[in-house]
Length: 530
Image (cartoon, rainbow, N blue to C red; front, top):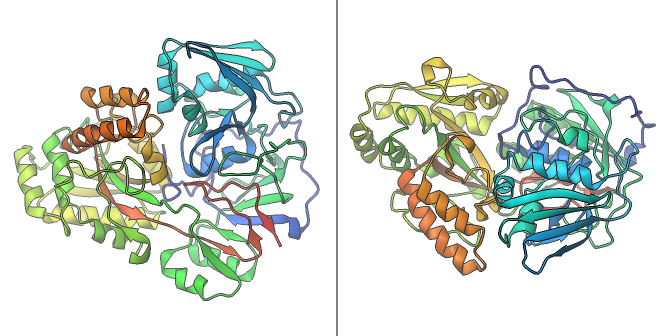
């Protein structure tokens, strides 16, 4: 599973993926250039937001699908597909009625059965969904527009869970697929339609305005409110060479560049036709993740050694180069979330502490085992960090080796739990939007629930008991108290090591306006082209 846009596949569709083009869909007449936006995005290789949480996949999903609830810019949940909802007096049964005007891109109506199947499939993979399925006694259709979620006990954060990293609603026949099998039909009910006829895997994907979409009447705010489309077509171009992408932006051949290279930011700033814009002001945290199932990182002392070894400033400069957008971070909850805290962070040393790391590896009984670091050569920031990590480990006597591949190879290999000699791994590097770290229920990276959790598979029952209490905490003060207790256990266990925080601007032509700032995502409604 990928998290942020820095960790994305730049190749075509994954091997063996069948790209489905339903016969009911026809290519539209090409819109005018004035009503077409071209965006240099990462390539989409996985289209199913249940199979992966890659930001680019979620951008795709927000374009073509819709959600039951959406969060506004302050992360408050609001109805989206839901028109009316209510809860029983004992707060155990929620009733949801769909709003009028919802229809699939194939012309059929959205029904409650679609919602039930989508919630159940999402509940197999997402941390928030897993919690819901544990607490639910029933999720069932009442009539074509109404469904219920019946709980064994009250769950005060139910609406938040459905809204923030909640389920995208798919057709029942798609949502009935196993959660491990990718949905490829790309037929949703959202504000954009995926143009199957113009799909060019590895090169570009095209999204057309859904003329039948009925937006909500409330003003657009974050992922809530009216999703009003103001262009006819959006084309996602995959241009792997950064210089080529920059030249296209400067020439007006494209309107938007999601990940401008940091060394070219001064060029953008000096161009009167271009503008840098920070849409996600909370930024992202880069981290390295260790395989807790295999040597040497099945030993807590070896994991703690990396906490002391890392020099965050050196890693951030190696990854991005420009200190203007970088900072250090010590809380597992990031720098910006309400539950960020300083509990158990004495391991942090400016410049790192290689001698302490060497001693901890010795205490772990390290005996020269190979440490395999996955290195995506098509992602410069992560590739540079992996190289620095290997060199830093080698300096203290660790048998570190890089395993170069594209990001797709990293994604495939990090799912393996085997020893390194059988194709497994020891460390990979990723990053996550800070805004997702304020809720341990919905975050993919913060559970420590073993082999049913995220890659690296840390397991700590005491921590998980505290995480379960989070779902029932009614006040921020309660969550802050839990956060401190959890962070103490987290850094004692050390399932991952923070490398630092970065804030990445996008680049756009000044003629493109109305972009919505959402952590890790680029919603395409509301934007317009002059």
